[in-house]
Image (cartoon, rainbow, N blue to C red):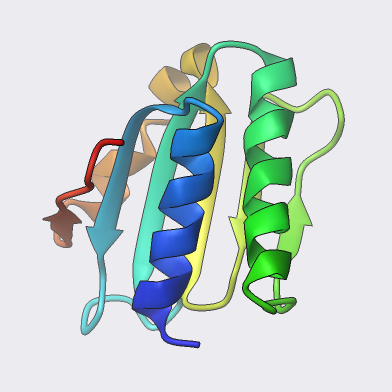
Length: 115
């Protein structure tokens, strides 16, 4: 599966669970860790976990099982490592605190389609 296909099902899953202010960065040729970095916000911890679960469900629907999840039930930040795509799901407060977008300033922001 290509990194673009992984990005597509990931952003669909985020949209399905109403992730907020979703951004994706194309880091091909810049980062050796992943091709794309995605960040989104959730209005609550419950929504944060719903978004992560939706991404996992979409991965399975696409026969993709090479992923890992970092974070706990009480976390305000979950990281889903899907190989060539890394997804960060934050509560709004945690996203503002960590400000990860500044790390990806050299990448090209990907235009995401709104459903």
